[in-house]
Length: 56
Image 1 (cartoon, rainbow, N blue to C red):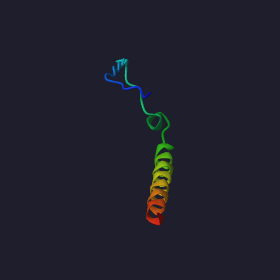
Image 2 (cartoon, rainbow, N blue to C red; image 1 turned 90 degrees about the vertical axis):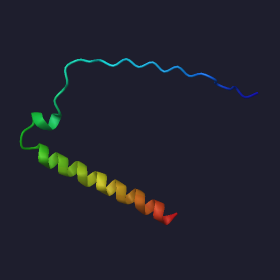
Image 3 (tube, rainbow, N blue to C red; image 1 turned 45 degrees about the horizontal axis):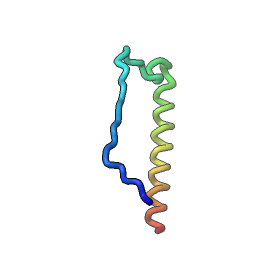
Image 4 (cartoon, rainbow, N blue to C red; image 1 turned 180 degrees about the vertical axis):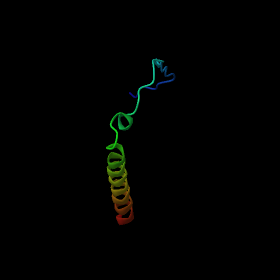
């Protein structure tokens, strides 16, 4: 016999502590190379996803 859920309660706690600095800002000079590598990886993954959808 299936179970039907009529209500769902979600509770979230957010910590409003001091904001953390990005790691790229803490390592001068290496940030641009890291960003370029991340962007290149993202582009490659998006192209793979588009190719797989086109092959379907």
